Every structure is written in structure tokens, then in C-alpha cells.
Image (cartoon, rainbow, N blue to C red; front, side):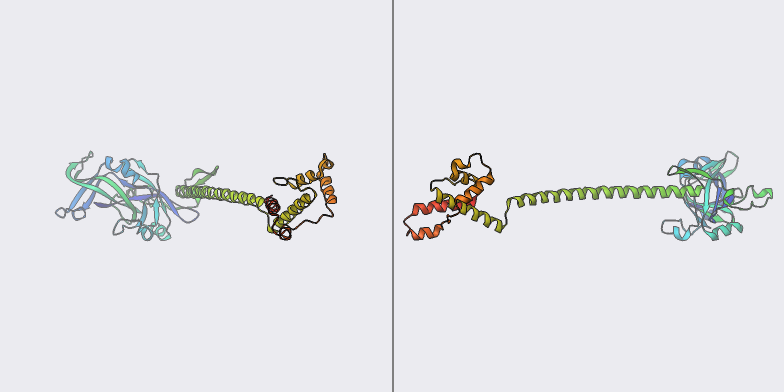
Length: 360
């Protein structure tokens, strides 16, 4: 079942930004009275509902107070993520503690209208919550009779109301109970009246309020998530770039290797012409000289014989050029035609020589 009850707010302080913060008694143990129709018993005019300490101060119930929204009066239904933006005027902090027979929580009001309402007298607190309600007659340890008992209390929101069920002990801005005849304590202005806590941010001590500490912890969590996401993205990107760089390097190596193996057309023509000229001149000087499988330098040395022994390549080139200066390289095709086809063996030899020169 869904319930509401009330308590006062004490020691309200205004921050430099105009927010109001306080520590409040939000709920209590003991008997609270409900109309029978409120709790599903229209046959009873009034029902005494008992809130035992084991229900009010259970770990699960206490934990349910933390970070719940604050509203002005109770909404028609419980506050949810869909209605929070239009209903919430503040938030309950996470430092929920037991204070005698009360539950005490930090409270922060961010809405200016809500703060004015507190200043104008709307100072009692009423908790909106759900619980299991067991109808059973009994008597409290203090000797009060009840007809129902609350179990499994779970908080939904905290409402600021003119008057609440929890009574005058649960009130905003009141250091003492109203029955003492004292006026509500004034709201203190300025951060110098606030109770601050010191937290460490990036190695530096920072003094802040409970609400500030909550906000800083929230931002820390978001920054940590953002840093983790950035690190993961960078790792993925670096891995992809490294793989692409390796692929490009492999391609570059393949291209460089191919370039060393491929000659352009002009260079190839020049090599073939040079080879044919050297072979032709060598054959003109010595028809028996072996040119197959020989380099140009080896052919020149073979033709020059002992004159090229122990001589440098430059000397051999010059000597060969001088010795063959007057020799005209024969045209193999013209020679075959002039021979009338009778020199087949010689033509084949010349053909093989040209082929070898081309291959070399």
C-alpha cells in the first residue's frame, strides 16, 4: 500500500548559489493514525498503524531514502523517471542515519519557489512510500493499542507539506518542537553557517556541502566513464592504424622489389642493341668465340686474349673499342638473304646469339 506521513526540517542554510540545505528528521517509529478509507478499511473511522523500529530502521528501508526526489505536497501518484522533471524541487542526500526514534537525512532544495514556501511556513515533511500493511491487533512496548502494522517500507519521495502525520518533531527550520512555544529558527544565510566536509579532488582538498559532494561524485563517475571510453577508442584506432601501416609497408616493399626487376622499354632497347653490337664485333674478330652465357666484359676479354689479362674493365672497354673501330656489325637477316639461304647453320648460330644477347 502507498502511504504518506510527516516530520519537521531543522537547521536550514542557504548556499552562495541560493540553494537551501538542511538535515531533517524524515520519519519516526510509533503509532500514526489514518482514516479507515485511506488504508482499505472503510468500516473503521480511524486506524492506528504501528511502525515498529525493525521496519523503520531495516537496512533496505533506510537505503531506500537515498537520492529520492523532494516535492511540494504529495503528487497524485508516486514520482518516476517520467514525472521527476515536472515534480522534483530538490533531492534527499545519501547519508541516511538513525537519530533515536527518527530517520535523519540530508536535504537539498534547488527550486526558488520551494525555498520561499519553506520560508513562508511550509516546513513539515511527509514521506511518500509503499509498504506491506498487516491488519492485526496489538499493543506497542509503550502500551498503545494498534490495529495494523507496517512492514517492508520503501521510500518513493519526500514532500514538503503544511502539516504532516509524523508530527511537529519532523519540521524544516525548527530547532525545537513547537510545543515548546519557540518560533521556528531563522534560515541562515551565507556558506559560513554551513557544515562543510572536505573531499579530495585530483589530490587537492576541497571543502563542500553534502549536496556538493554528491554532485562531485556524480561528475567523477561520468568523467571516469568518458576516460575509459576514450582509452578504448584510442586503443582500437591505434590497432587499426598499425595494421594499415603494416599493410602499406608490405605493398611498398613489393613495389620496390618489382621496380628493381623491371626495365623501361628504352633501357631494354639500349641493352639489346649494345649486346648485339658487342657479339657481332666479337664474332667478326673471332668466329669461334663463345658468347652464350657470357657477360659483355667476358666476351671482350675473350676476344682480346692475353692483352686483357689483369687489366681493368675500363682498359678492356677502351681496347675492345679500338680493335673493333673499323668493324661494321653485320645484319643477320641481310646476311642470310645474301647467302641465298645456303648458310642455315650460320643463320641459326646468329639467331641463337641474338636470342642470348636479348636474354642477357
